[in-house]
Amino acid sequence: MSAAIASLVSYGSDSDSENDSEPNTSVEKDGPVDPDATAHLKPLQTGRTMSLAVLNSAPEVAVKESVETGTHLDPSLKEVTYNPTFETMFAPEFGPMNPFRTQQMAAPRNMLSGYAEPAHVNDFMFEQQRRTFSTYGYALDPSIDTHQPSSNGYIGAVDEAEKNKGLTVFETGHKKAEKRKKIKGGEAGEIEGFLGPWAKYADEKDVAKPTDDEKKELEEIIAKRQKKGKNEEESPAEEKTVLHVKEMYDYQGRSYLHVPQDVGVNLRSGEVPDKCYLPKKQIHVWSGHTKGVSAIRLFPSSGHLLLSCSMDCKIKLWEVYNERRCIRTFIGHSKAVRDICFNNTGTQFLSAGYDRYLKLWDSETGQCISRFTNRKVPYCVKFNPDEDKQNLFVAGMSDKKIVQWDIRTGEVVQEYDRHLGAVNTITFVDDHRRFVSTSDDKSLRVWEWDIPVDFKYIAEPSMHSMPAVTLSPNGKWLACQSMDNQILIFGAQNRFRLNKKKIFKGHMVAGYACQVDFSPDMSYVVSGDADGKLNIWDWKTTKLYHRIKAHDKVCISALWHPHETSKVITCGWDGQIKLWD
Image (cartoon, rainbow, N blue to C red; front, side):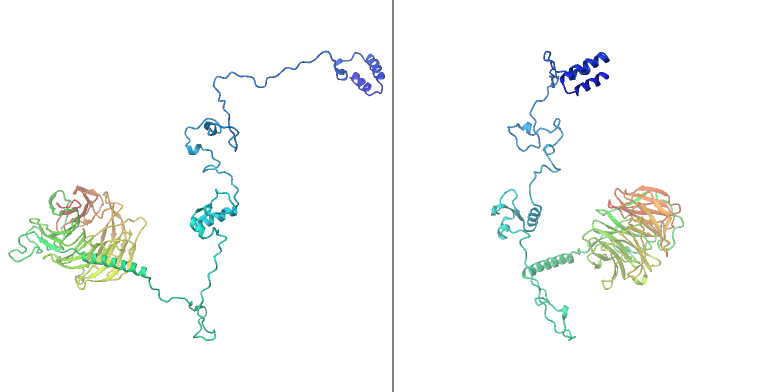
């Protein structure tokens, strides 16, 4: 350490001679000096030179795979100084080519929809051209770089551009229209003659007359309407009737409407059978309709005749007892017959067809007495069952109305217009003072006779449409065929409440208006279903007791004979009517 200090001291002295002499004396004093400590102070030796080793920064490496040695293009380059091959130009930027990419996806893109080159367009200019194009249909062609617009420098409606001299939206300032002049309306002091702000315009027209072209159009439309009207008015089909039995009157001069007394059952009594039994087998088939049967009705009170209407546009009257013949056919509808209804005595009946006509027929002679229409399709028809109102009937129409006609005048006397959908059924309850209607609007409404406002409206969110309703023989219950494959029972006297204990299930009816019926003693409920089966439930327990395969297609109606213990009549869309016992 002392040697190093000594050398520093000697380095700072003035003369070389002192330099030479002093260290020697000091070294001698302190002992031998390490040559490395003073190596940097000595001049470089010229004899020996140090050799540097050359380092290879990129040695050759033996590679097993062949490495691609192509020139690579920078994708951001705009100019290339040599001719690259197609493969080089369109090679993927990194890594190998993705085999699953479509040509569109593989193309170079700098935005989602493709490759947009930067263009220097002023925002205002762009907006101006866009608005001009959307208003007038022309704009400057952006691909032509000129300051002077020429006729071929436009895209879109070039003729418009020439007409408007290429003016843009912002340049063509439309002149303000002159204000319409009003008639001057006197002084404010005059109360009578003062018009003020209520004065008419000078050029105002009081009467709007159609121009000649408009007149022509209107005349054409009116002519078409009149033609249509004529067609509809001409459309009621010609009424005919065919008697199928040899003698219309027997040896005593009685017609087939006379109730027979030789059938083993007293059809004239008002008493119901004491106990009813389940029908087991088919005992007769009435065949004669060529298409599906849509409804069947028994003769009032006696039930010795059966009336059926069908999609073959015909209505037929059949015997229920003795030979069970087809007695008469009523032909008079040009389209399928939807519903039929006897009056109280059975001497007349109404039919409702898809040809928009309601017709009143004489059951005995087959004559069509009168026809009614309001140019809408009637879905159901019912006579008022009151003895003193036998001249009135109601029909549920496709236009949401229930229409009431008077047979004597042939005119509509009342309209019940509250439903929100086509009216499907009408059922009289409460000693014929009221009637219940159901509709496609999934509601049930109760009306007082001749009062066009429903006094009860039943509609629950869980309710479905109920296209078939039947009143029980004791008049206390309404059986409604619901479209969720259930028969619901409503009270028919005052509250019209749903009887939750009596719900009849187990059949498939969704989409079909299968008519329900009760046995005369109220011990069974019967209904057809979509599979053509006849279902019989017990009224008390609501159990499904019996199921019979009755028809090949939908079994649309089932009627229990009011005087018989176990006779049920069914009809189906296979065109057959069957009697079960």
